[in-house]
Image (tube, rainbow, N blue to C red; front, side):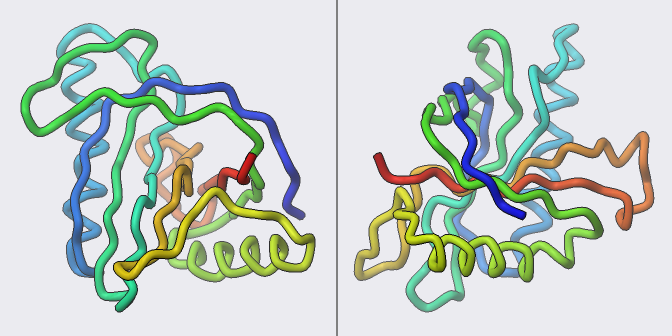
Length: 162
C-alpha cells in the first residue's frame, strides 16, 4: 500500500541520457560505473542507487532519465558525470518486491492510487511529454549480495507538488 513520506534532499553523482527502450540497459550499467569510480577513491555510496525519470516523451518512444548514486560530499568523476541534489519534500512511496519486469505494473498501480487519492504530482505536461521533478526507482537490494531478482526490493518515490 502506498504512503506519503517526507524525504530530505539528497546529493548524488549522476549520469543523464535520452534513450528509447533499447537504451535503458546502457544507462543502468552506469550505476556500476559510478560505484566503481567511488570505490577507486575509497568511497562508498551514501544510500541506494536510483533511476530518476525526468521526461517521459509524448510519443512514449523516448525517456530522459538519470541514474544516480547518493554521496556524502560532492566529487568530480569526470565529464560524463555530474553532481546534483534530489529535492526534499513529500513523496508518494510504494515498494515493489520482485524482478524489475514488474516495475511497469507497480508504477501503474502507484499512479492509479494517486489518482484515486487526489494527489498532485510535481510534474508538468508539455508538448514534448511529461516533465517530472523527482520520479524515482530506488534499488534497495544489492544484486551482488542477492542475485535472485525475484527477491529484490525497489522503492517507487514520486514527488508531490507543494
